[in-house]
Length: 346
Image 1 (cartoon, rainbow, N blue to C red):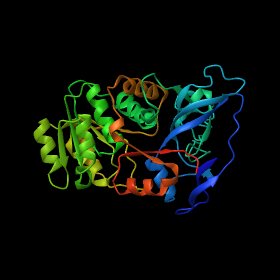
Image 2 (image 1 turned 180 degrees about the horizontal axis):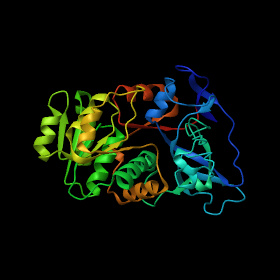
Image 3 (image 1 turned 60 degrees about the vertical axis):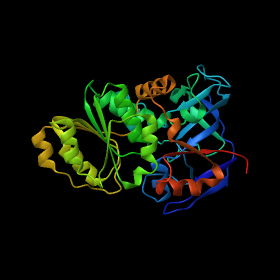
């Protein structure tokens, strides 16, 4: 089978390579990959900016169909349409696993960076990490279940939108627009999107199609703090920081009301970010740093997507696996929102 492989540490070192079809163990299933979503993590791996263990097939966001089941598998059968949590190799013994946080286990080796992932024809996954795709949800849309599960876990489980909340979303990538939609579903009174000039031509049009916001602020043309204070009166109840930009993080702290909540999802490209610490202290802010997804997050995300309350189709573009280089470049240049790679015979 043809796979997109990161062969060695360092910038680049990625190419399409011929790899054997994996063999599933007794508690695993073999999945024919339908689509694999390109995540920011994959781009970071290309540039040697994220942990990974080469040689490894990239890709951790997928949808597909079960084509073989191991002897101990009881919950799935051939033909089932599935997605899966990328929490492979969690030990099950540490305090994190025992408290239900397998996604943060120190031994975790996710598909796509720790073990072979989904940018190929076939993928092996343990039964315990699978979720069945609801009827009526397409394989294309289901391939976005992983980022949707992250947002559901961080925003709905942890930060908890309260009906009537003023919610500001910093960043207009897939995570930001998923967060805006889920905030609306949870009863937010007002959702304000913050973006840049680069977001206006394409991403803002997608947001318009999703009808997921009440006000857009171009932070390069407007004073975001002044506009948010005017819109909210006393400041935002909740800010979702999905950009990872230091300036956005500082603005987030500035526009939150006292006792407001900051839901930090965006990863920065730097080891440290300067923040107005005393201002956050004086405001008595609740700050939640977030990483990955929970079982409940997956369950909520799939139900919201299947019901049509959270839409992903307007964000999606599809490219053949052989065009991976152009797909990565288009995402880095902001020319696309979410691109799915479709395996095919070359």
